[in-house]
Structure formats: structure tokens, C-alpha cells
Length: 456
Image (tube, rainbow, N blue to C red; front, top):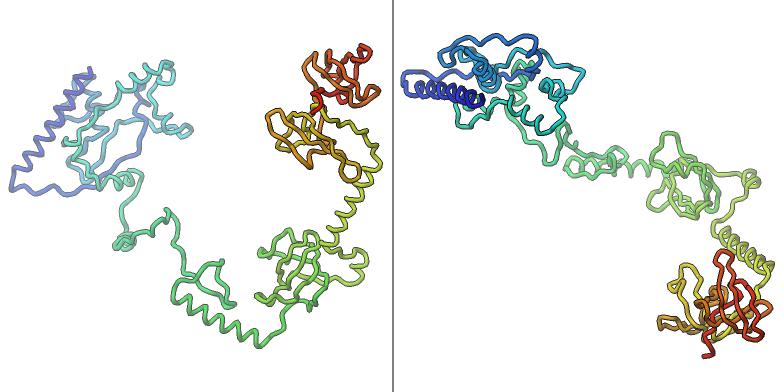
């Protein structure tokens, strides 16, 4: 069936090529007038496949009337893809008479082959879809040469209802201008940048044209004359040391909204760079910034009496001093743990964030610092040493040996006595020890027992 259809397509293409060759051989014949290509919108060619069969195409010399179902299918495929009406002014690509697409469904779903969605096997679905497709058209065939490439876009527009170029369109596209590099579709080129009368650039841009530079020069002269005529800056008359509150004007986007309502002290009533700005130090953060006069309101004595202004540096210094006093008071109120560091025991570094955190080692020597603080120099298991000033006692923990290892009691009623570790309970954090002095077996907290490594 496919071979018959392919032969039918080849016969039609051969007839078109023969007609084209005959037209070329005839020297007296005039070239055919250019025709407007029309490519209609797609429809569902399978919508009426079951309802009614399409009417047979009229007989022509190049394509006789099909007599079989295969020939009718081949003729419909050729007409849908490449056939053109030879005697009409417009070159219209024909399509089979089919129903309109269902607007409630996507285009690909509406034009899908009937029954294709019910096929589960992907291979069978692919073979069924390909079997109903038209044959590929060779770029050297007469059917391909019938459609002019330069008219393809206009043909699509005509199929959508476009009536052609108007006089205004002809004038508009008579002298096309290339779009600026990097300018996207629908975007307008960047306008010329100019200064306003206040000498400010629009949107903070940079002037590049001569006209913009001249406008900037005139604007600066005008601004200088205005300053000379009215030297007094607008806004409240501020003095150094005044306390002000920042009130952001409504609709003003040049000032950070987070500053609205913040209090500050005036460091300089007029900034050297911007005369209409005052240099302030914020009460909350101590940040120094310039704020326009129009956004400042000076606080009177009554307002300061209710809520005195607190300097940031003084407040921070007082907060640090209060924190130190509180820590010192807490340390004094906290009961001090009895000292337990001894030379010869094995300990673990328990200071989180330290580079030797969880490392174990033997205590070489115990040092006494200021205020009776005890420190230890260590010989770590990996061969490294911790020399003076060593680790503080509060940053070390006791370490236990495997069961049966030698231990020493560092806290409790058995302080200083040695023995053997019989077992440990990690949940209760206790260790069972048999002491050498009297062979008594007792249970002590793990913090009261450490591995004994012997004197250095």
C-alpha cells in the first residue's frame, strides 16, 4: 500500500517536472505572473473521517481522478502538502475538507489521530502515526520549487486573514533600519539623556550627547544663580548637637523607609558636598549618614525630658559594663567546683569550637594562675603537646580507660586513690571501680574518676 502511494506521488511529481520543462523550452511563452501564497490555518483532517468521505478531487491532465482508496489517500496527502491551484491568482495550499478544531482542547490534542490515545504500546502508536503521514518531499522536486521561500511568512499571515501591505506599511518599511545590538523585540531604544533645570540627571544616568552636556552646563549656571540669590537652605535651622527625628515625606522614595521615626544627633548642620543635607549620628546604631533637611524635625526640651537621647557609644559602653558586672555576680553566686586536675591522669578537651575539641591526652603538669585558676599542660595521644599557658580546668573533662584499666579517683570520698575500672553505665554516667587499698567495689560518677597513666 505504501509502495503504491509512493509511486503515485512520484508520478505526480514527474508530471509537474515535465510541465515545467516544457514551459522552459518554449521561448515565446511569457513567465507566469507572481501569485500570492496563502497557507491556511491547520484543521483536524480526521474529524470527519468516520462521518463522511471527502469529495473526490476534479480531474486534471496532470492528476487523473483517483479510482481506488489508495490513490485517493495519496492525492489528498499531495494536495495537503504541496499542490497549488494553477489557474488562480493566489497560490493557495489546499487542504482536505475537515471539521474545525475543538477550541477547548490544545492544538496538538485536537488534531490527534482518532483512536491514537487509546493505544498503550508506544511502538504501535509510533507505527500507526507514521503510516498515516505524508511522504517526504525532496528539495529538488517541482512541488518544492512551486512554493517560494521568501513568500512563506506572508503566506502564513494571509492564511490567518492578513490582507496585505497598506500604503502606510509600504512607507514604514520602505527604508528599514537595523535594530540596535541587543535590543529585544518590542523594546524601544534608550532615549537621549538630559539634565533637568535643577542640574540633576534623569534616573541617575550619564549624559553622552552634546545637547545633554550643554543642557548640564546651563543647568549648573542656573543652579549657581539660585544659590546666590537664596543662600539660606530650606528646612529647619539646625545647630550642632541638636536632637532631631527623621520624618520621611509621603511619596519620597529617595529616603530609606527604615529611617522613618529614627532619632539622631546633628554632627554637622550642613554637609560640605550637599548643603541641603545634615550629617547625623543615629541613636539606635551609631551610623553616620547625611539626611535632607526636609525630612528632619527638631525635638524640643519637653520631648527629650520624656525620652532622653542616649548616645550610641555611651549606651554600648554602659551595656558592656553592665554585662560584665552581671557575669561577675553570677560567677560569685555559683558554687565553685573543687579542683580535680592532677598530673598523670588522662583528660579530654571539652571546649566546643577549639581545634583540639574531643582530643585526649595525659596531664603533664598543673599550673596555678591568677585568682587560683588551675591550668594543665598536655601530651596528646597523637604526639602533639600543649605547653604553657595550657588549658583551663573548666575546659577539660576526665577520660576513662577500657574495662580493666587503671583509674584514679579525682573527686569524692576516694580522692587520690587508685584502682581498676570494672564497668560503666553511659545512661547513668557512672563507673564501677575496685579500689586497690581495700578491694572494695564502688560506683562513682564518671566525672569523679579518670584514667591513670602514671607519673611523668
